[in-house]
Image (tube, rainbow, N blue to C red; front, side, top):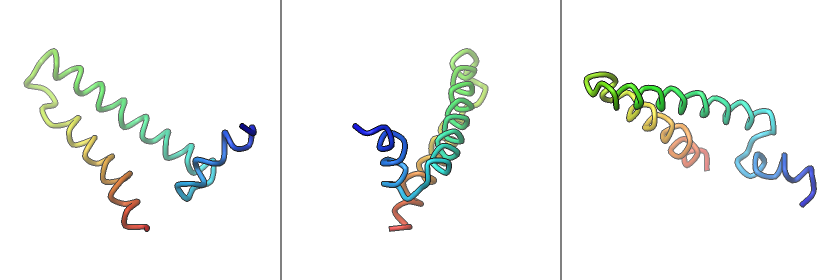
Length: 72
């Protein structure tokens, strides 16, 4: 596979530049990290963050799947 393809083919397939995709993927990583921390705290103390991870994942789904379907 060409080196250029490794960096640019996938972002182009979702209608983004490399840097747009980098920013979006980084934002998702940050949001998933917050969800992971919330669910870890919830595992230790079930009274904490009862719906936080679910809300974050639902928001990510809306941003990734639903919004992209609307753009098609």
